[in-house]
Image 1 (cartoon, one colour):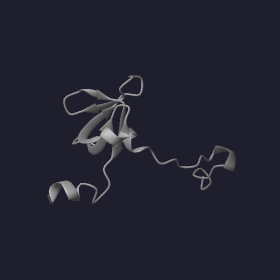
Image 2: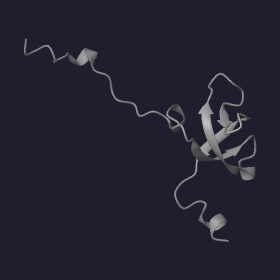
Image 3: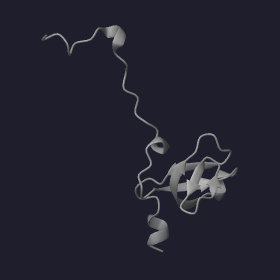
Length: 82
């Protein structure tokens, strides 16, 4: 049947891009991490995200952190070039 691949609009769902922490590669993601004060953030590699934990973001040693966001290209240049 040529129509077997077709579906009705009721069955369609919009594609929602996963959040960065829902798709962490095996080697991890270089992130800015902090607990409560973003001004005290430091760069670390995040290897896992555990949504049910209080400290959801796990570094390469397994320690948990409250907040993390990936480092953007060029953000670490001032540290590397100094």
